[in-house]
Length: 258
Ligand code: ZN
Image (cartoon, rainbow, N blue to C red; front, side):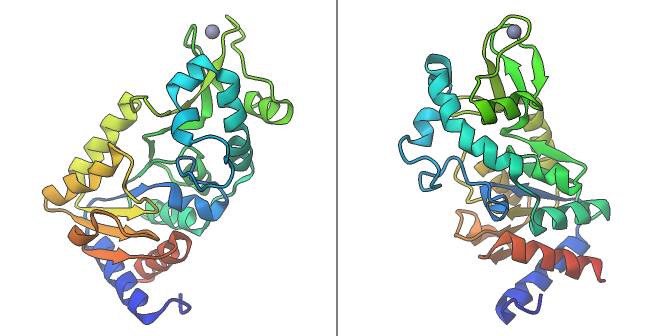
């Protein structure tokens, strides 16, 4: 971590002190924690993969229902990127902190499963996951294995083996409610925590973006690690504007070396 500038190192040490002093730390991660793994933010217009359509239009429930081919054409490059992505040092840092009892849960806006692949035990996927698909007709759920591979390679739209209707990836689209159980669990963790680490989220997608404010209202502390400023920066105990893949391992190292 010697490559980090001194002012950042000071903040890293302060963040580590907070983690060591806390009773119940949780993390909240967003797109920025997967971009170092090559997974683009699918909500971002400048993600580079989709120049022809606005994500808000094509990644919506309306498009999925009315023009599933268009939706699946849009999803294909993203799903391909996710399938080949590997966890980055920030995922490893959160997993290690969790395994050593310093983090109770990771709430994530990401759908790529990279926290679990890094070894994190408690991951709350508030925007769903690409790991499963559900039939829009009979609600039979399928693991993505095989279906997503075939779709990426041959462009075949995944269909239900029972009723032949289209399978919808279990990710939250625009116009869609968050899945009930993960959202409930996330709110529970937010209510219990005395420290929240926000990593790689610009905190603009509601309702998840509102969670850190609940933490502040509960007089608990917030650490922000994000490339760009967030609306919660003024309330946070530590704010580090940098790459999660540099900062989180530095914080974890500082915590674990004590
Ligand atoms: Zn079905």
